[in-house]
Image (tube, rainbow, N blue to C red; front, side, top):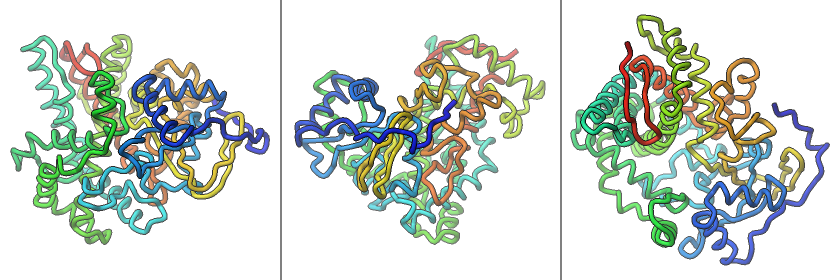
Length: 470
């Protein structure tokens, strides 16, 4: 457990590291990040070299076609220094979702959607409150729509296993997530538009990819092709503009209650309400679940011993009547702990950014550093969440880690949602509005799985067999 000395007891140290020569330094770091090392090794080797979890380096995107992007960052790679990224008195979150790089606003109809606003900007509170109200309204149908769409998803998986001996489930899962989110958040059944039902989730995949590819190591092409073809320039929104307009029109025509809420209760224009709803649905919720849920399913399907324990808990809590609701799932300590540990081990958003609002001192576990106003701080969550000063055996996946009093206290240090798991989203911070719904939904999906099946085998991309519950 973290019991750090106060900053006054720690030595003041100059931030180690260097940005290198202009153009040359950023390009060298870019090649390491994408090609020669990869993100994990990139951050770990520099932390070892400087003997510090706080240091200066560069992060992509960089030269040659990102002349308006400053790649210089101060890396913060332990839980203590990382926590400064969420102190809104110290940092500014304006336009730093993906670091100093921001995709074209034309991806969102030319608007700066809420995620790009700092808490000091007047419109932030309106948009954050609109998002939280949308989630509150959706809670009435959330469970029903989730389980209904899971019925379809698992039916598809079983059919594929029967025909092919295994089911590649990521795309069916994405289709399930898309339909579920449209119904629960926007109040729209995708069946009203066969085109959107068939292609809406595919549009979101392309829309998301075009925005994040310049900053993301993919490993889908051999080097140097990936480096040259995928990481060298920003992608224009025109590639997806036509299909995005179809999604916009679908929401515009069918999500009247949600749009009116944005207009009448929060003073948004119709365009602001629709584009922000699409961002919450498409980038935050759909994008996050698309990354996180395969990690969670893969973790469970790969461990038969864990399956037995989870199945036993689910059926004990739900009883013979298979009653699954918000109350019963919150009684499943092991299920929730597995969800939390998967978020620690495989955070869906690997990088968090914030810009220093003023000069201040940032503390790691062993030193204090001077940060200057305007400097960009960057935390790499997969490394932060393996901080040995906080988490026992940090490189081990421990399903029971968050059970009991000690486990509950660890949630103060579980950062995956732009804040700690114990934090409360509000208009005064940038924590994910749906933080609690994400963990609740993931827990419901796990519980639903073991009410359907006695066992399941597979990994994070495919399911090979399922045995129906007896």
